[in-house]
Amino acid sequence: MAPSPALLLCQPLTLPVSNLTVPNRLVKASMGEGVADPKTNLPTPQLNSISSAWSTGSWGLILTGATAIDPAHLISPRDVLLNQPTLPSETVIASLKSWADSFRSPILDTPNTPVIVQLNHPGKQSPRGASKTRGLFGSTLAPSAIPLDLGPGFLPALLRNLLFASPREITPKEIQDVISNFALSARVVAKAGFQGVEIHAAHGYLLCQFLSPTSNQRTDEYGGTAAKRARIVLEVIAAVREATKEFPGFAVGLKLNSVDHQLTDKKGMDDTIEQLRLIAKSGLDFVEISGGSYEDPRPRETVSESTKAREAFFLEFAQVAKRELAGIPLLVTGGFTTRLGMEEAVRRGDCDLVGLARPAILDPLLPRNVILNPEVKDEDAKLKRVTVPVPWLLQKTRLKIVGAGVDSVSAYFPGG
Image (tube, rainbow, N blue to C red; front, side, top):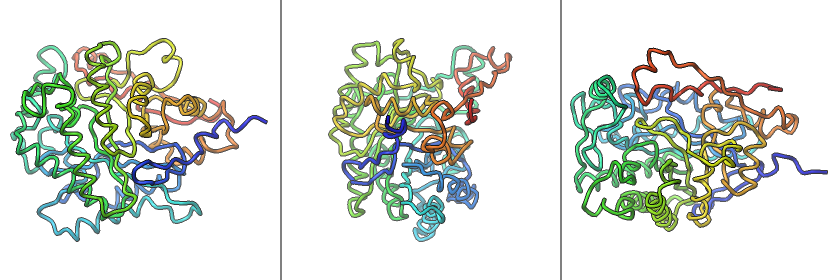
C-alpha cells in the first residue's frame, strides 16, 4: 500500500540550535492583527481571542503577527509593542504571558504548538500617525534617505507624502539602538513564555532595506558591499542570541524576501548568495522565504516554466537559499493551494516547512480539519482563492499597491 500522501507533512522537525521540536510541517504564518490596546499597545482580550482560534488547529508552528521593538516606529497605531519604557515591566510581562497562554489548547490531548513572536522595525514603511511618540511629522528611519516609490505620476507621489514622512538616514548610534531594541524585545518575549522569535528582514521593512543595494547606498561599515549591507542583520541575530541565552530551547528565526532580479541578474544573485552564506553561520533555527513590500506588493517571482507548474510563489529562490543555508530549515510562505503541492515541495527538498497565512484566517483548524486529516481525500484537500476585482478607477491611479490583495479571499471548499 502506498504511504499516506501527507506522510512528510505529518513528520516532526527538530530545529538545529534550540532543539525545539515542531510536531508537523504546517506553519500558521504571520499576519498583522492590529488590535492591541490603542493606549498601551499591549495585547487585548480581542487579540487573545483571535490567537486562541489557532490553538486547536494542530499547527506545527504558529508565528504571531509583527510586533514592534521601538515605540517611535510602528506599522499601525495598534501594534503590540514589546519595548515599553514608560510602563512597569511586570505589567508588560503579565499582559504578554496572557497572550502566550491564549495559544495553548485546553482541550487537545497533544503537545501544545510552539509559538514564535515576529519582531519588526518598519523603517520608512511606518505610516504617519502610527506612533504617538513620533507624531505626524517626525521622520522615519532608513539606511539611506530614499523616499518610498509607490508608482509613477502625481497621485502616487501625493499619496506617499500624505501617508509617509520623508525618511532620513539612520545614524551609527541609532543603528546600535535598533540592535539593542531587537535584543531587549526578544528577552521580553522569552520571559513571557513564548518559544522563540522571528526577526523580520523582509517585506521592505528596515532590515530588508539594509540588505538591498537599491535602498542602502551607504558607504560606511553598514553599506557598500553585500557583506556590509548584511552586517546589521548579523548583529541583530547575535544580540538576540546573547539576550536570550539563559532560556533553554528558545528559537531564533529570520524572515527574508525573495526578489525577482536575484534570479536573473548575476551581480544581484552573487550578492544574495554571499549574504545567505553569512546568515548560514549566524546560529539560526530557521529561515522563512516570503515576498512583497509597499513598493512592490505582488509576491510573485519571475520564474521558469517548470516552477510555474508548482504551487508556491518562491520555490525557485528557495532552492538557492536551501543550498546556501547549509542545513538551516527553510520555511516557504505564499501560494500553496493543495495538500499534494505542499507535500511535493517538502519531498523535493525545496522547503522543510510550509507557511499558510490568509487560509489560516478563514479556517484556523485547517491542518486538523483538512491537510492532515486522513479522511479528506487528496483531490478534496485544497484551498481555493477568489480573485477580488480591482475597481477600474483605482487601476487608473498607477499605484503599485493597488491590487496587492486580489487573492485575499481564500477558503477550503470540500470537493472543489
